[in-house]
Image 1 (cartoon, rainbow, N blue to C red):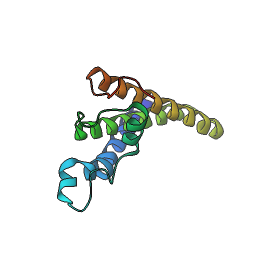
Image 2: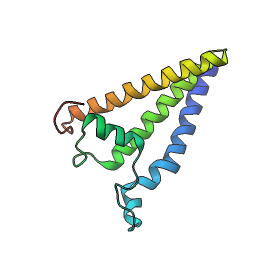
Image 3: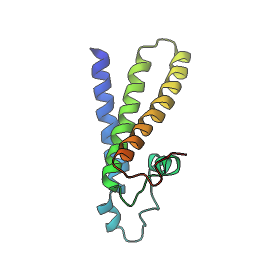
Length: 129
């Protein structure tokens, strides 16, 4: 039960941090308010990864929807990693398992995002690099 509470609290805390500090300033309406900044000047690392690895068609994708999806995915990945690492007692194993879990979750979750957008027809060539 404690691990479930840890998972939900970690997810909510990380999601709120994403919303306030990363997603909020990058939303289209906030970028339009700042005329001196271009939309491509600031971009999440997750979006850069999706753009370079999976060749998504960003002309078809709604920017705010993608930002929200990245926030949920990243928060969920980190919450799962924290919960898994909480079961381990040795510090060295926490670091090793934490690294493996985080890298695996990031790769899998952003591949699932690619499949989601591919199903909707929002990939330029249909194949990832």
